[in-house]
Every structure is written in C-alpha cells, then in structure tokens.
Image 1 (spheres, rainbow, N blue to C red):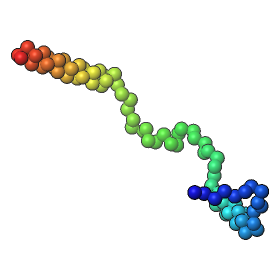
Image 2 (image 1 turned 30 degrees about the vertical axis):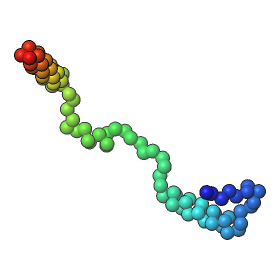
Image 3 (image 1 turned 90 degrees about the vertical axis):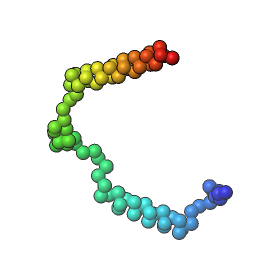
Image 4 (image 1 turned 135 degrees about the horizontal axis):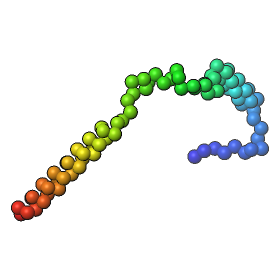
Length: 85
C-alpha cells in the first residue's frame, strides 16, 4: 500500500533543500550533454557502404528459378508417391 500525503501540507525545509540540491545536480550533469542533433551531410558517415553492391536482377532471377525447380520437384514427388499407393 502507499501513503497518500494531503496536498494542503507544505514541504518541509529539508524536502525543499533536497529538491533544490537534486535540481542543481541534474543541471550540472546535463550541462555537458549536447542535446542538439549534429549536422549529417551523408558524406563522412557513408563509409560503411563503400563496397556495397546492389542486388542485380540476374541474382534475383536465379533465386526464383531455384525456388520454382524445388517446387516442381516436390510436386512431382508427391504425385509419384500418390500414384504408387
């Protein structure tokens, strides 16, 4: 269970001091962090795609051809097994 504090009660001096210290500490900690996004022009950070080759149509067609051959062989095997039964 939790303890609900009545909103009419004011903070004690200790609570106020702790809250102020924590806020100041958070400001100091976040002062060094740059929250602005850096400019990205796409030139300096494109090094990872230097030797990247795009997929060619021929490679894709070979994959489809292989898939169709496997499908035809599988269907033929099923038909042969069904006829023998």
